[in-house]
Length: 182
Image (cartoon, rainbow, N blue to C red; front, side):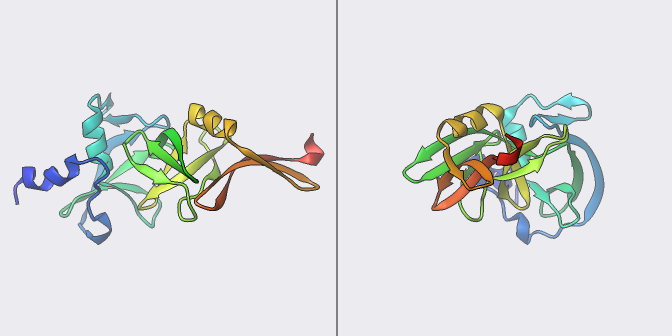
């Protein structure tokens, strides 16, 4: 198989190879880091070609050990990821669904298997993220978070106030406050 034949299907947006079926040998660490803001940096230099970063992102895998790898049918290289490997850069409502779009052109529908989750970012604040694929997640960008807040519903109990959105019939929390802290 030629390299062009291998890469051709990956040139189509949204096409991800069957990484879950590949079991290549681990070859070591690659000097590649995905920064907390989603920038791909190879050997100290930012990858300036978005399409190249998107192509590499289709080969990204998070293993059971918690580390991130670039995987092909014949090799596996560990890379560093400062926070989440992807960033949600757009969110749009379609009927009763919310669709998240990442900086790497992945489109994810918020649903039971792709819920918004609050997790701690490297700086210590709790920020929403969403599962994308193969153990990979996308951090919600600030402008997208504010867009979601504009469309959020409020749910309250005697001791808690929460904002969130409903997508695919599931509630997705954007955060909440204990009434005692008000």
